[in-house]
Amino acid sequence: MSAIAPKFRFSYFIKSILDNAFWAVTLFALIGIPIMMVLFFYFNLPVMNDKLTTPYLMLTTIADPSRQIPLLKSLIHTDFFRITAFPGFGFAALLAAATIFIERKMLAKLQLRVGPFYCGKIEGILQLAGDGLKLISKEIIIPAKADKPIFWAAPVLFVATAAAFVALIPVAGGGWVVADIDVGLLAVFAIIGFFPIITVLSAWSANSKFPFIGGIRALHQMISFEIPLILSVLGVVILTGSLNLSEIVQSQIHYWWIVFLPIGAIVFFIAMLAELERIPFDLPEAESEIVAGWLTEFSGMMYGLVQLGSYVKLYAFSALFVVLFLGGWNGPMVWPPFPEEIIKNGITMGPITARFPGLPLLDQQMLNDTLWFVIKTMGVIFMVLLPRGVFPRIRIDLLLHIGWYKLIGLCFVNIFIALGLLYAGVLGPGGIL
Amino acid sequence: MADAVFLAISVLTIGSAIAALEVRSLIYGSISLMGTLGGVAGYFLLLDSPFVAMFQIAVYIGSIAVLILFTVMLVRRQLIFFKVEDKRRRYAGVGLMLILMVALGTIILGSGIKTIQTDASPVNFRTIGEDFLTYYWPALILMALILASSVIGALTLARREDMENEQRTN
Image (cartoon, rainbow over the protein chains, first blue to last red):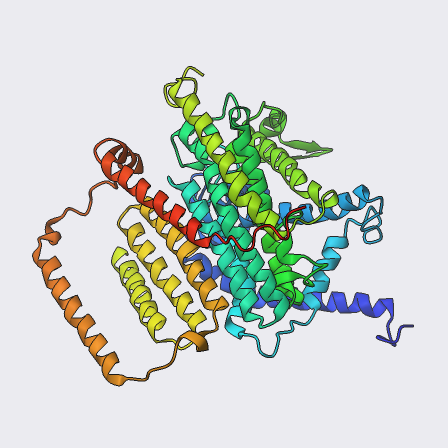
């Protein structure tokens, strides 16, 4: 019998769950369904089975799976779904969560530890959920002399900026991107420019030494590595003749740009590590020198938001590397086609035959594209995580020296290689390859 | 729709410009300055030139506003600024600005800008690039030389002979 809940019985626990379920169902039937009926009149409902859906038909989908599939299909092609779920934030956050788990487990293996082990029986697979619950339930502490509006806004803005970055990344062919704009690459750099501002403002607003030192370091680092970051992709832009990220991917259908511009890819990768504040460039949050750098004063879910934002940013940068240098979603067709029998005959289980008109939900090409994109992105993320187990932290003067002298020089070498290939008539618009 | 967006952007731009001048806190002032510059980027988006808008954001918000923020944070402002509360200066400034705006407005409205067709297709940025490399090439080379000389000048000014490699000799 525990001290926290002295009268605990398992039957009480079951009873409370049943009670809650009863009230949820009752309230949904009495209040939720009428509100849904009212709200459905204001939405543009899709056409199902050659009939415009009315709110009454909409409610019958609860019982009829043959109506659910067209409904799902129309939902998948809405902007709302794109922004929140698939090419947008939900997908990125899912990959970011996977990244956090893989990072902890992989680092442990590299250093001959076991890593997360006990949560969820199998290799600590539920550790992440446990950490999330812990962060949500912790108190948010704000320093007494902090500048409160900026301090509150900074984590939210960080996540929002990372999500805006994700919105520009094309995941699969056929328009699977939230914002497909002509100047996509420029928009990416415009968005990257917001990260140092948010970092330094949050560091200043905490009104504490360690965050401020970390913020100033982050500002130095991000500003100086933005220049090689931008210059290193100029080669791709010169050879492609386009700033649209989808067009850049389509131009790599036969060969990847990393084959012709390896220097640009390496410079982009190093600058990416610095922008992401990953080891060996993690001076802004150097935990052995300045506690946690600009994250020192964040607690509870504010810290969680900043972590979420930084991992979403990690996904977005890795995806950008894949889009620019590794051919994006291009790859051989390996996804199996949807079985014809289910489309024709439905699923037969004993005496019951369930027919699903409207299948398949997503076409084979798109699933294949997504598979290749995710495989390549996870590969790049792995390469970003790997230095953390291997390298020590770099000194700030060496860091700035690398950024300003070596990387920028290499960028110009890369640009001249691209120009040479273009003017020799090998690649680019009207080239022989 | 465009009118509502235009009004919203105008309110944002002008409001944050006034706030950038009037707010006592320098940090909030520079944040308002970012709002103004972002509003200008919004105007460019409304004018169907996303290329210029993205450069406006990347250069003005991403670099210049950050530099201002950086300077404001690293400088103790009591040392360089002192408050001179002079009402007459403020009113003179507001009056001067009003006169300027009215004059500019009459000139612009009288210049026949209303007869410009608004449904023309946006200028492709590839055309801008081609123009730069063909018709306007002297201007491009001049700009490049000015930028290069200013970068070299800045590097020369920032160079310090007295701190030569104490730390990083080994």
